[in-house]
Image 1 (tube, rainbow, N blue to C red):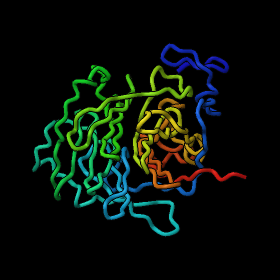
Image 2 (tube, rainbow, N blue to C red):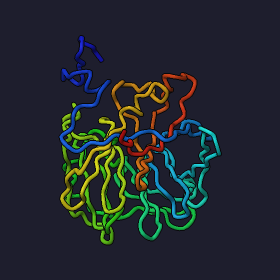
Image 3 (cartoon, rainbow, N blue to C red):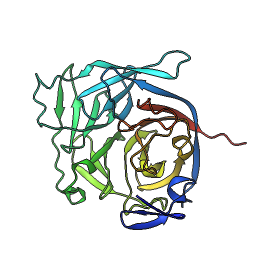
Image 4 (cartoon, rainbow, N blue to C red):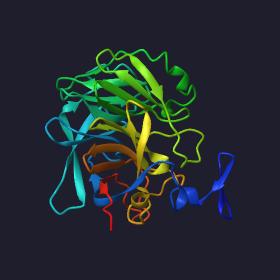
Length: 308
């Protein structure tokens, strides 16, 4: 990384640093700001926890997943505490020593739940969808990706399925980057219905980067990690209806992580529940600026900023 006065050189591009490190760029869409209601550090007994997906479980529990394990964790809150414990959920814990998971390496990302309460996850490295069935069982859902495989990077398996959402009889996958794309499936047949992308005008990257998805009240929400924003999308027109910004939260001196690249975002999990927006940070083992000894992941509960 080289700094030139008010400009940064990134991947051969010279761009204004202010668009990445201070105020967010002006968007072409109706824009609202999220404000923080509460945050938690996430305690785990498994050591480093690269949090990568969040969903509300069928029993009302808040569930999260990390990329390196075929297991789902429940978030246990304590009253008046800014620390929450992560406890492995017995129903969604897979012992890969006893069960053939189909691949040697996996990278579990987002979580989604269908109308029947069945939990799904996407596996970025193997480019597949996983479905949790009975206790300790997991299956890979057959699907034909030939119509969208042109969007997949042939060099980088870490630029693949980063988010999943289910709603309206459809399943959506987010192809993260290199050629950022949202892929739409018919949920019953798991056939590809189409794919789309968009540009917000607020990123320096040549394509939109997606790091999470969620469905709520007939709308699709896409987490744009590098833009510190959530795009609310009409699933019929495939158009953005508004942008929700959380730039101030992520770069607050209390919550900011020592990211390898300063302007990169760390949010990977998104859950929308009415006027509440849950954000889950994957800090990749990096510590907080405010406390170099603290490298735990973070969970944020946000709401729309009230008008003065």
